[in-house]
Length: 381
Image 1 (cartoon, rainbow, N blue to C red):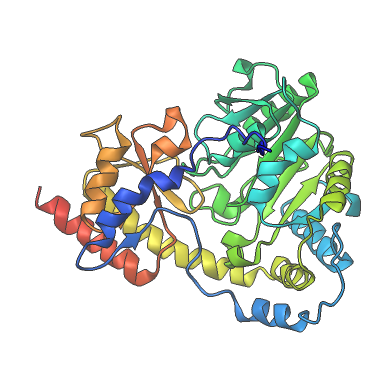
Image 2 (cartoon, rainbow, N blue to C red):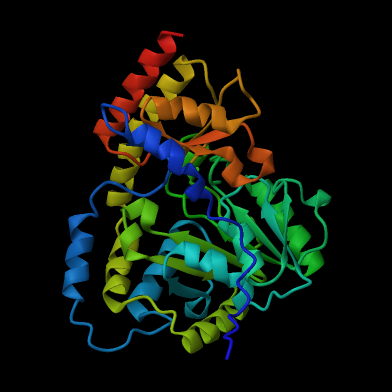
């Protein structure tokens, strides 16, 4: 009997697999590779969070999908500090990292073939994948111009943006809310870089949320916010994140997650609750990234490269070479020759061609090495 395998999902090649040749060239540098291609934290997880994980390690029973009262209270308190609408316990849930939520929320909400999902035209590729996993059609759009959008069932936002670091203002977010409510569409806003602002007014006032009471008029209907502790607390390995928003949208997500066993481990929930409660370690980590950002920004600018001045928050610099403004790979290859690995803009949509994403997530020593190589190489040109 011949076995017929299920039809595989129609998904594109994983983008970072295309970086293998450049990574090999960078790794061959006598001084070793400076990997600035991914946003994975390199600094230690704060000791108090690791202690919390250990304290809760006697986790003999299954964790709850909805989360413990402790972690849900911490999520609500986090939202209150960001001036977000109080959605109550029914409007919050911990998730297994925010990428999992980005990828599966459309499907869990009932998006299906024939539906349209709008994604930012310059964006992390998982928004596109989330639409595809549901069988829907992803359509790239300018997130700041909803008047130009087609009809859609669901809209993804990402502010601060990955890869470009752009931040949507309150007025721009209000425009999205008004458009979505006129269409009956759901808006899912990925705000995982909100704790890393670099420019005013965001340093003083904070990055505005889709669910800021002034943005949504105190009404969470049709709106969801995703957030991750990977960036603010160096918890990428914990897979600690959350959904915050309209309880009427959270409820079917919870039900589907109960059936499928998508639950955050109990020790992680306890550690997550403490991490969300403490703000000092978040400030400390931001200062670490600020120092690295300053060094890289100055070196890249002095080298004559164009660093997007609108990169107001997040973990990346969005860079182009004026000599090759439409071909990302030329700059990727040039940096690889110096032992520096960066991500081409091609990974983030056709509107991103010509740009390169440079991450701040390398050790101080590797950042210093990258800065030294850039200065030496470009000064010799």
